[in-house]
Image (cartoon, rainbow, N blue to C red; front, side, top):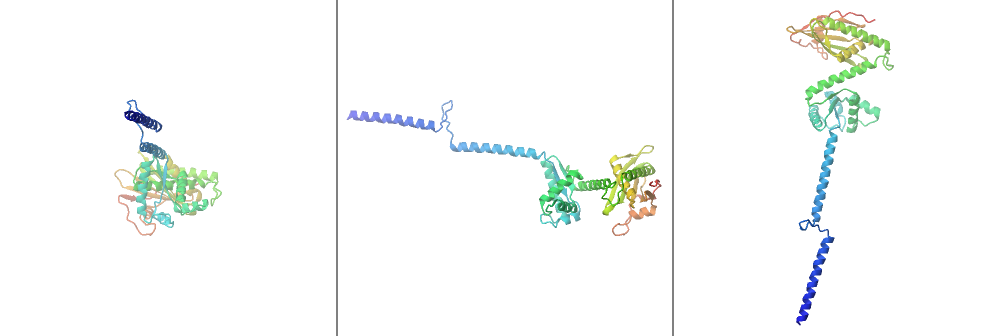
Length: 349
């Protein structure tokens, strides 16, 4: 009986060793990891899932950072509705989300700030609803679509007048934008006149060159006759198809020295004046002169048959002190004298 018990105990011991061996083998097949210190480093399935998720999170963060870095290299352009009537014209489109112009301008300024923060270069262009409608007819686009509006804005900005947004308020940006757009339109129109077969009258290359040379002489006569001081000249010429061409020129002439002026402004002024000379338009020029210690002086001329004919002081006063829309009189400016123009000379050959 004792012999039987010893045999049974031996069998149980052998069985325990086999079970231990089986557990060790199972752990080996299950991917047991042993560190050098002998501790079991078996990875729990959830731990592996968490590590995988963290890896995906890092990859996603890297992709987002690369996307932001690329976005900073992409320029942005915004088409701005600066006039009330332009804004009203866009309200006929159902996809245009605004019904209040001041509210639209506030959102536009917020957009400009956000774009400037996201990327390094943002430009602003004038959005013209009439030109936009014509563009859509020419290209077959649906005008009642934000995609069409953005495509038109990109086209305008690629070849038109734009202003770089640098954080300036809209009260400063809009006048600069309108001035640049007006100068750009004037330059394009004036450049298209000489020799343009589609124009009402084909001026021809020689006639265009002759008009430019004569306009340059007239400008020189204006600057010489103005004398020392700071001068602001404006030339206005009605052109074809209801176009009104405007150009402004600022110049300073010290006593006993030559006049200092911007070459680009001078070229634009000369070009507009040349259009009036070539087309025989009844345009005009006004000059405001400022000198230290005395009131500003205003004088003017009307363009007739290639000549600048001086206006009288009364005619200048009437032009400046009459509302162009209503014909009602306006109060004269303080500390301003309204005087007759001087002889510029030079009949157009």
